[in-house]
Amino acid sequence: MIRRKTVNFLLIGILIAFVSCDSNRIYEENLKVGEDGWDADDIKTFNFDIEDTLSPMNLWINFRTSTDYPYSNLFIFLFSEYPDGYEAKDTLQFILAKPNGEWEGKSSGTVVENRFLVSQGAFRKAGPYTFKIQHAMRDETLPEIIDVGFRVELMEKTN
Image (cartoon, rainbow, N blue to C red; front, side, top):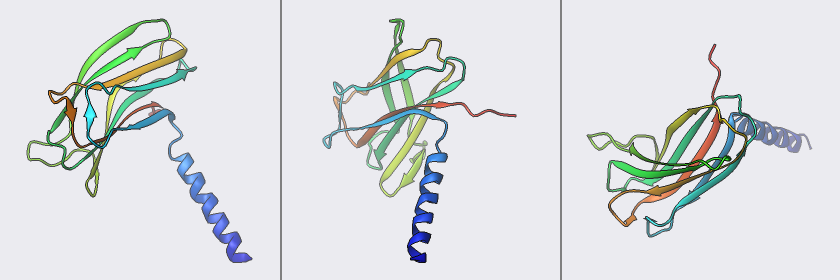
């Protein structure tokens, strides 16, 4: 009986620790890429609502690749749609490996995780936002991309 209570207490503690570690996250979604690679016409779409227009936030793009990804960089198109109807398109480049071939990001076995900051500041309008990510590499199908994600988080306050 005591052992069961101890195990339950530890499990609850671990769950609380997991939740509290990411308290700044407003939105995050990571979308899988097909086993054959990321096709140029496979546009990853991220939809979320923003209510807080006062707090500064960070916008991140996440990529998980295998260590067999054949390039040291990744070009993407980032399409942005705002609640007032404004739309924008940006071309961004992300460096995934150093010139010596060492991977940037966090490696775990054959998987490399990267998170890139793409914007900082407060959202100007409350409402629905859509961000779309399309690869802009020369290959029609980009191999060894595992998933693509988008994250919105509150900026940490510095004292």
